Length: 149
Ligand code: 45D
Image 1 (cartoon, rainbow, N blue to C red):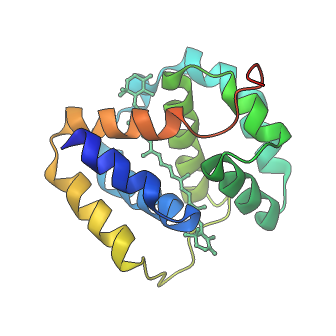
Image 2 (cartoon, protein in one colour; image 1 turned 120 degrees about the horizontal axis):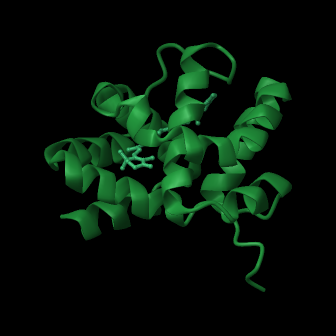
């Protein structure tokens, strides 16, 4: 179930991937305690998160699309050196910044695609541990490894 959910997630369009992550966060948010994401891990991502907060909404959306699409950009390379837990903590923090109005929100009344809704439904059927495993696999591959050629 974990492998197939991960595979269908990765087959989604970039916008659908961002939308599913967002809705996963809104559903799981309460189960993920900020303590669990680790202050130390966020410290490693802080520079990048600060940089993103300085950007316009359009640029913020672009860097998130670049990350999901594994497009080579400065942000994608900076992200690529994070550990998987730091990558998860980074996405979690981006969601928190969206809630606080510091990062571009998903448009009100946004309609997720059928494919996206299906993946979200599959994700919801998994237990919490499996959901984390899928998220780890998904965010691990985002961005660009600056040391790969
Ligand atoms: O206009 O370290 C669209 C533990 C459409 C413990 C859009 C953990 C067009 C160890 C693309 C929709 C395992 C618990 C706009 C960590 C349009 C540890 C915008 C776990 C504007 C870290 C879309 C942590 C946008 C976990 C902006 C489980 C979408 C963390 C943005 C989970 C989506 C984090 C974002 C999750 C989603 C974060 C930022 C699920 C982030 C999700």
